[in-house]
Length: 336
Image (cartoon, rainbow, N blue to C red; front, side, top):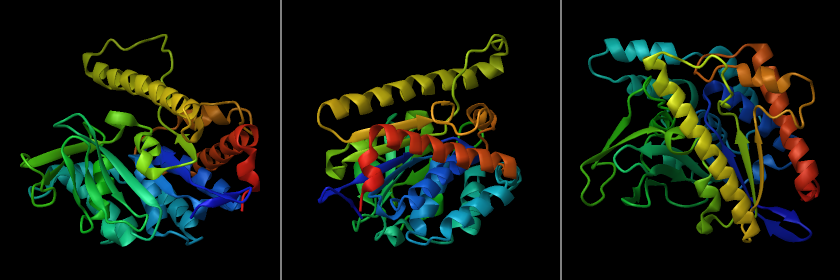
C-alpha cells in the first residue's frame, strides 16, 4: 500500500488523536482530503486513540470501500451513545458501562468482527493505557500479520479472536465516565499476570505517536491529526475541588502533547520519518476565518454532531492537512 515518489516506494503512517466524536469528525475531514489526493487507500499504518480509534477502526474495517466516509459521516450526525451507555450500565446488574459502550460499537459500527478480520488492511494500532504498569497497551492488527495485544514490559499475546468493538471501547473509555476494560489471562496469557485493566489511550498519549516511531514499522512519512482539547489560559480558573482532577488531566495531556511533537522533530533530525502535524486550534492554514475557534469550541464527548459542527470540523481538518502538505512535503502531492 506504499506510494511511489521519484520511482521509490515510500510508506506513510497516520496518527489519529483522541477527542470524542469531535475528533472522529475532524479525522473524517483528513480522510476525505487524502482520498481526493489519491493517498487514502495507500496508507500503511493507522495509530489511533479514543475518538480516533472510532474513526480509524471503522476505516480499516471497510478498507478500500469509498462509501465508508459517508457512512461514518452519517453515524456521527445521528448517534449519541455516552448518556445511554452510562445509564444502561448503572441499571444493568450484569454489565458495566464499558460493556454497554462496546455493545453500541458492535451494533452500529463493527458488528461481530474480530481483530483478525482486518488482517488484509493497513497496520492498525488501537491504543489504550494499562493501569497496572502505566504503559501504553495496544491492540494491533492488519499489515498481513497476526493480530496481537500487549505492551513492551509485560509482552504480547495473540489477539486474532478479540472483538474489535471491545478494543475500540477500551481505547475510548475516558475516566471517570467509563470504567476500565478488564482483560483476563484467558485472553491475555502472559506470565505473572492474572488480569489487566485498560483505560482510555489518551491518559498515556492522546496523539498515539509511539507506533509511528517503531523501527519495525519503517515509515518514511508520518502525519499526526490532533483534534484533542487545546489547553487555553483561563482568566477565571476553577476553585472547585471536583473540577481540579479534570483540569489536572488536561495539563498533563498538554505536556505529553508537546513532548510527542518534540520527539517527532528529533526523530526526523536523526534520520527517522518526515513528520507533519496539525492541531485543531491552529489558524495557520484555515480557509475560513473563525474555523479554528469554532472547531476547538465543540465538546469532546460522544454525542451526535449537527451539520454546522461536522462541516467546520471536516473543512478545517482538510485545509490544515493541505497547508502542511503544500509547505512541508509537496512531493506527496505528486506521488503515484
